[in-house]
Image 1 (cartoon, rainbow, N blue to C red):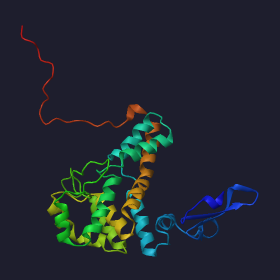
Image 2: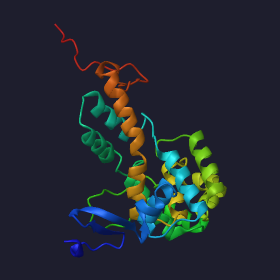
Image 3: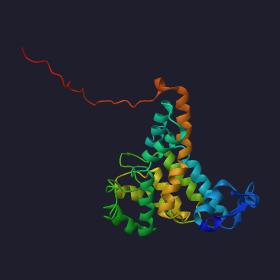
Image 4: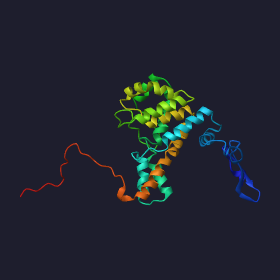
Length: 268
């Protein structure tokens, strides 16, 4: 049966007395449980899984820092709010996580935006003139896809007014750790890029640059971005499960002018 499994990523030797159990597991040739366990970090394992080779010390540190920055998008984020909705209603764990993934997969601060932003780097690189042409739009070539055309340049917040402090802090912190050129370049060109778009850089834009410097493909970056944001969604869902529906944080709507009632008194 094992001869039918074709994978360059993972190699297994079966247990002699039970071929459904694994005796030895190697990830791209590295003995996971015999050599890596207790010596390698989580970030190093993730990099090895996706890239097929161990990361440099600097790349491992960057991936670890990126994972920390993305671990909890917070209850303002739509994907976390979706998980909290599941938590307050007692939804099973798998459904809570799937709700977060579904809502966080799109083109606004979601996985798809990361994919588009990483692809933009492959076109523009560290060339401000190329970015000027790209940011003018359109931001995705027409193709046979279920996704609609993006409504804003990937990596920038269409509803933002100024760059959030945590975005500035993340960009500055990751740029000093980066083994590549994308993060340092965007740190130096952020104001110019924001001037071109009229929009502030988003955390998704910083994450995309980090994935570029880690040499992940656009598809790998999309998947990892979704994975790295799940811990916060899960933690908030579990917290909301204990708090119950009466303490669920519903959004409030504030009207700039007094709303006109749809029911008007009929003249007599």
